[in-house]
Amino acid sequence: MNWGPIAIVQYFQTLKKPFDRVIFLVAIERPERNIGDISVYQWLGHLPSEKQIQACVGDAATGVISVENLLVIGEHFKIWPEEVFLVDVEPGAEQAGEYLSAEVEAKIPEILRILEKLSQENYIVLETKKLRGDTLFEENV
Image (cartoon, rainbow, N blue to C red; front, side):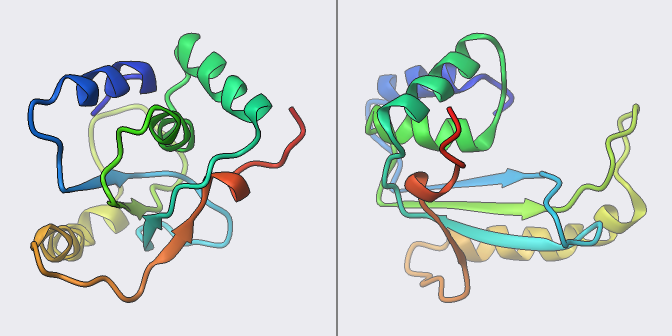
């Protein structure tokens, strides 16, 4: 989904049958990771302050596309099912072009295996990092 958070919320709100599980594949630069490193996060909900929620909505309305904003805004509008996961790949520095770095390209089979496991109905995820909306941001807003 390459849409802004508000459009995604609106899409989820129009679903006749809600999803049982949502899995996002994202590529975000994070400290202390090497290019191609994969982290799996489980979204636990818990909203930040009202001021931070408003900041997320404001960013979304101005075109900022951020998975953190998406998670918080989706939580605020109660669109998420009980199970939401992020498979997060360290992309390295952004560069122009349509190709993946060699490190990320080499990880595609592993990424696909993780996505396949997470998509199985009875698969229980044991090793995930936890994401909570009330700890996602520094409250400097």
